[in-house]
Amino acid sequence: MVLPSYKNIVINSSKKETIYNQLSPVKWSESPMVLTINHLEENQLEALENIDLFFEERPRKDLPYSVYILGICDEYTGQLYLASEVSKLPKFFNFKSRALNAKENNMMKKVILKRANLTNLRSSEYQPTLNSYAKNHRKISQIKKEIYYFSQIKLGLEKDNGKKN
Image (cartoon, helix red, strand yellow):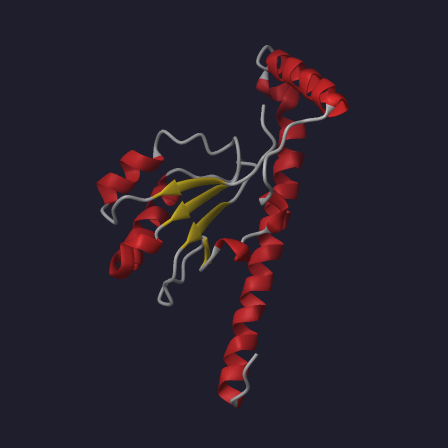
């Protein structure tokens, strides 16, 4: 088991079928995902709309992690968090993997053992814990969206007043 850090998925095309084929096999509950659409240039809005459709058909409210989009599209007004660069994503999940020390390694072994036992439990036994864990991660995501929203308002006001950063 690895600590949750961003998993990057590069979207190959803006077409609905391609996006559905690419996103369907992904295990959304394992880590926060970053969908990269920067390279699609003028087709980013179409790709964002198709990604929105994908998540409307497959609700992700029970997932512990958010989905982030890496792209630049001023016309997008959907539900997903859109960032122009990796540095604007929540830093909570942004870290480099390193080798575990002895104490961390022992703790990880216990976690792996408990994870193996978790598959033997009924979902009603572990669902409350999983839901509280997911709630905390959704809260981090919501706070980051609010920060992004207010920074966009600030930039707009500064632009209207003729000020620069």
